[in-house]
Amino acid sequence: MKKLLPFILILLVLVLASACSSGKRALKQGNYYEAVMKATNRLRSSPTNKSALQSLKTAYPNLINYNRDLAANLETSSDPFKWEQIADLYQQLNTVYDEVLRSPGARTVVASPQNFRSQYENALTRAAEARYQLGETELDKSLMLENREAAKLAYEHFKRAFELQPSFRDAEAKMYEARDIATVHVVIEPIPVSQRYNLSNEFFQNKIMEYVRSSAKSEFVRFYSPYDLEGNNRQPDHIIQMWFDDFQVGNSKIKETVTDRTADSVVVGTVDVVENGEKVKKDVYGTVTAKVHIFEKELISRGLLDFKIIDAKDGAILTQNKFPGTHTWRETWGYFNGDERALSTTDKNKIKNRKEVPDPTPQDLFIAFTQPIYNQVTSFIQNFYRRY
Image (tube, rainbow, N blue to C red):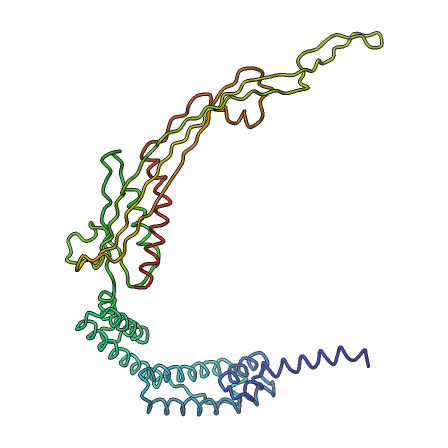
């Protein structure tokens, strides 16, 4: 009996798996669509499977009747999206139709499968019409009340109508019209150039523009430079202004450190000695010293960016913030007097440069200290316009 137990368990698993793949379980649960799909799939590889044949024979007519009854009930409902649901029901029946045709075993019990192409196409047209009408209502509301939320709803309705039937009336054009009305158009003004240092803000400005144009914040927010708006009549909704309240580039500090170094047990020479009647040379160990001069230079650059978003229609300040940035450039050089063997590895690394290295340009230092400001600005823009 113990020897038969594994065989019985395997047989039981196979029986259960066969029942599941034949659609029998789905049929018992009243899931006619799943039962038909599993049965036809099973019959494609095993055309004479009795369980699958019986499941399909029972499930197929039940599925046809069930979906048609649901569609008829939906037609009498007041649900504005009922035609999309009806289209889904007929599409399900059409999928089953195609699957039965592809399964010779299934054709033995469903000799004449039914297709519902015309019902499906009609439901799609009615669904697109319903969405289009809803879009028209919301679009009119948005124009009369200058309501962005209504325009956003109109966009979603026209978009869905276009998805349902791409050639339906002027749904595509209406979709873009609604999106344009719903969109907040933001112009980012140039940052004033520093006359004190003769520096350019172009790199920082370009990085901001690159970010806002490429990073997804909201489908209904678009950013422009003043140059983008030249030659068209578009008026911005928001204006972003930025300028540096104060900044310093390259405040320098130089510190010299003088350190005495010693190293013990260093070979300082050799002597001749006699061992076993022979003259040999032996190392002489001693202490070596050196004086290390290390120069460390720091160039500290820092600034404060004033950031403001203004309503272009009435000049109201929607939000304002200040973002600080700091960057410290460091370099070392040096020299030593004495025996190099007294130097540590750290000493040697620090005096690789024997002379003072050239400073970075003020423009490079300016770009460096604006990097942390860039991170703060882009994060702020992302969070502010997410709600739009």
